[in-house]
Length: 547
Image: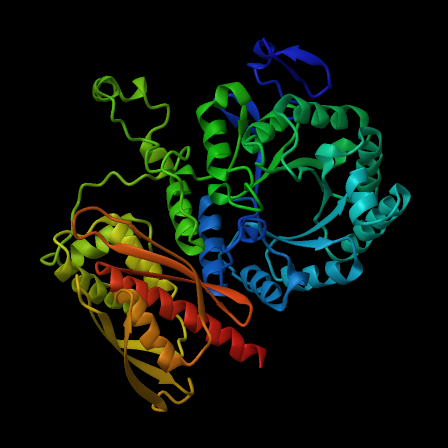
């Protein structure tokens, strides 16, 4: 029987922890006091650092609103000092009056970074400055080329300056998982004395194991005399596949905030998965004896949204939100589930928001059925948006025998993400076949001045290619006259049936910057062309701003 650590740092048999004893009761459920676990979501900061996962401002706002609907306590909206784009994104999210979550920005331990962070987050109802600095000797000596004393001095000065601007300060000890415990405890004590509200113990490279990491948290709780003045947070990476397990071990040993991302995306192998942590604490609530504010029925919507906007697909066997999470192929399993769902399902699909509706929409469906289904899916649209979406639905319904929930979500999110486009695809015709040369003809409108819509030029070109998509891309290239290099291309079906909607995701490089594009259609050539046009418009927009 393996051992763990209680908050006093003593080893105990796992069975003795099933009562889930906690030190402070903050809420009551069924007469039993439970500590509250805060969820700190960093999808928009650490998650966006996944290669190719960058989002524009409109997409970040969509994710932020979904995180607020999910009930996340803190949304880390970005790294304001890293770029003007990140600064504006964090500022815009902070200005959203309907977001009740605290808005945090990440910054290094420097006045310049901290000031930029404050200028971005200060508009939020609740603002947080999140400062980080490495504490492992490896990082201190090799990366920062400083001494422990210098690092400690930098941290204290940074906290005091941050505290002069913002009441809520979080400090992350980067690479705490590999830090010397004596120095780490001294460091934690010093920054708490300086005014830190939340101290974040990070397993930056996913190096530790659950018992080891839980022990570190327990030792900090035992040795740091002022630890009761700050919330212990943990930020675990998934390099060895242990991010969720390490986070849970930390909770067992006194951590009361977990940092995580939707779908577990993030640097390298990613971060602890929000949906997995939330459901573990819900399904095994009697074991952990804690509570949280996550509205679990929004987990599936959040997962689908982030996957679609970043282009990072969720693996079918992903826990909680994967396509196979509630699928049963084995005859024995099917029989058991039909008799009693609990035999092979420890979670109710409805608890995580997995759609189970059998309502099928088609070309004969009216507005009432359509709008009801959109509302059932959790979307609130204005009259103008609703009518525009309904028209697009009718066009799609003419192409498909049935329109499924996945199709509607695609239409809604595609419509929400449409913005100013310099190049607009008006017409596409492509031909191909065995023994013939693939050709494509495209007609594109170019908006010269967004303030003067009438100043729009129209161009038409044709080209041959190794296939219809290649031919279409070459015809487009002739019109846009930009040195675009296609670096990644993928196609997949995102709904059911022979006439399923196809989604194309691609990346292009223009002037050494990579841009992503997504397109959907029942015609894969059209989907591929839409994706290419979206990437080109992103590249054009960015290049124009840089001039």
